[in-house]
Structures are given as C-alpha cells and as structure tokens.
Image (tube, rainbow, N blue to C red; front, side, top):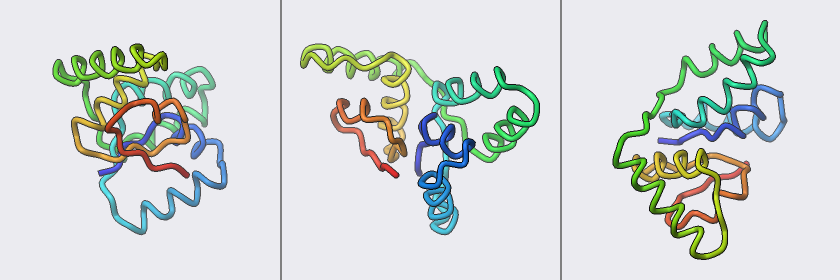
Length: 128
C-alpha cells in the first residue's frame, strides 16, 4: 500500500508533471492507494477554499482512495515520534506526525516531496 501525502495530492491536482508521471506509474503498478485522514484534511481544505470545479475534481480524486483513520495507537505513536524529533532539535508539525504515524502503522510507503518527513525515524518514504 502507498499512502499519499497532501503535497502529492496538491501537486497532482495542480498538474505538476512529476506528480502526474508518478500517478501514471502507480496506476500501472496497481498498488493499493490510501490517504491518512490528516492528509485528506490538508488537501481538501484548499479545494473547499477554491470551490467549484476544483472542489469537484478533488472530491472525485479522493473518492478513489482508502481513507486511513487516526486511532488511539496511531495518535500515541505520533506523539512518541514528535518527542523523538524534539529531542533531536528537529520538530515536525502535528499533522505531519499524524500522517507519518498512520503510514508506519499500516506498514506503507509515504509518497511525498515534503522533506520534513525525513526527520521521522523508521518511516518509509517515496519521493517523486
């Protein structure tokens, strides 16, 4: 399974060539695609702001994805990861910690271009 970060979804929606190529690759590979609930929130917030056709496209896009909920064990893992990052002097935002912990919990690669995720130990990243 691949977890999509909001950065990938936004880039895809904006027609960014690297994201479009990666989406083609993912489609050809037939991987199961999911989005952590916090990434869904980040992605759709911009779409709701823009409204109209952009919102319709975003809602159609996410309808094809499995949404991964944040459970208590995921929230606790996100807190643990956040504490670890803080001890190293490399803070990571709360939503990113929840996204990372969700991907880790599901043993999934996180597809992103956001360099902040590299600060999270044990997270399997895929970039584009």
